[in-house]
Image (cartoon, rainbow, N blue to C red):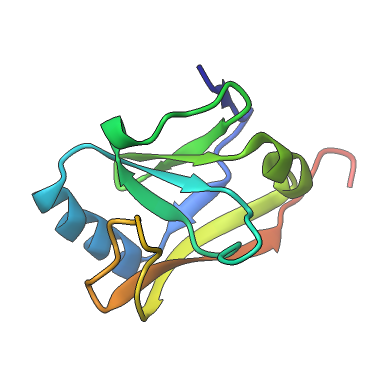
Length: 118
């Protein structure tokens, strides 16, 4: 069971939505997870929904292209005042991510969002 962020924090470019649609033709049920790991901190991982086990501390921060987007709890605490934009760039996705082998990969761009009282 995961937690849901109080408001959506994620959106996607048209290029990202196109790649999501392409992946969903092969894998209809998918999810995104942003871990904030040491190697690919700006690369969200895209998995078949049944192949990735969500932890209790993972946070659902919104949906893009009808696909849930989760972030690790520790990463959420750091990024909770950030808006994430999922984009696509040339390259290969992470080893286990469904964008791997498509010569394009997902990339997260971030910006600070307005908070109450600012």
